[in-house]
Image (cartoon, rainbow, N blue to C red; front, top):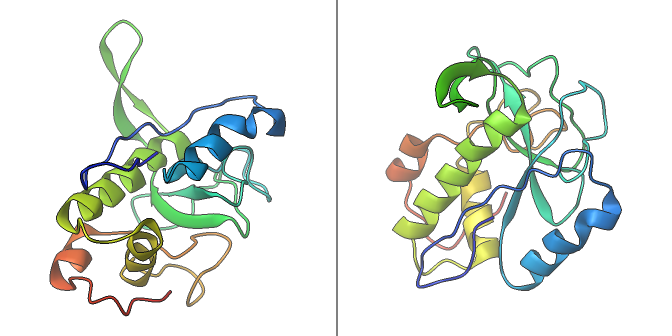
Length: 171
């Protein structure tokens, strides 16, 4: 989640494995307070995304592989907003040991990181402006425009550095 602040962002991507829509209250509360909630789509390879990625007020994230193709496990649907690397991602596992993991929960921090960088670099943007800016300059994957597999595409920081916001971004 990216929270309101001095321009600053507080990040905590939710991981509510096995939660139901009854567990949506934290997300509803967060978004009502101006927080952008970024959520994994799930790992069953089917549509629609699982909770919390299926929620309209979250930024749903799917996973792609190193070639930019949808990961076979990545869930998808109309609430998918972005895709990010989620296959064979180096991580830190139980026992303070290094491991390699795959999943939409591995992709979600990539999107959080991009949104935090954009927020910090563009303090004057409102949340809707920030999300529009992120959508416009994401690298489109799959069908042209927003699609159910990749959303707006894969954000790449260089795209944003080369294209500072001018207030006219609309996805």
